[in-house]
Image 1 (cartoon, rainbow, N blue to C red):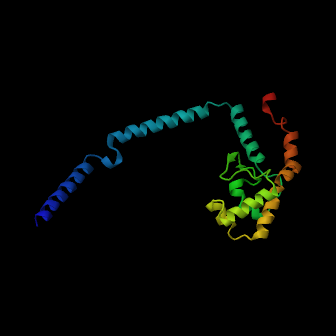
Image 2 (cartoon, one colour):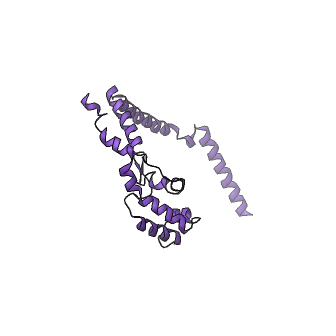
Image 3 (cartoon, one colour):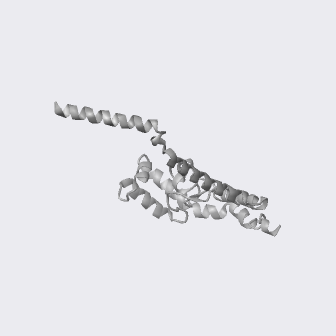
Length: 182
């Protein structure tokens, strides 16, 4: 009985403190201190915006052009199978470089590896001897001939990239779009 009275008393005290806090202007929202932090955030964001606006038109054009070059340069430049696109490209890149749109992807570079090495790695991942849950999950439904096809295709990436017309065009036109000479 005495336990219930003590618990009732503390419950009333807690509810009273909650009501007092709520009536004093939002302690749950940071009160006056929350406004100071909000002001700091606005000042930092404002400085970043000012720095971005400091660029002249030429610098903005160069940034846009470089972004387009980066995006175009990361395209494969050669055909890859739908199986590679669906199983491999999201982690290893559409051309096996490990990069896409100028950003490093989760998977390592595949281009330049031999067909035998890739097939061995695929078999090891599928069997679980090499630990990678993502790889094991992706390879689970593939049979040995599917793995061989993927290994053959990936092993051929280096040759395809050298023969790709887009890579030759990029080499020939490397300085064609260099705006610093204008």
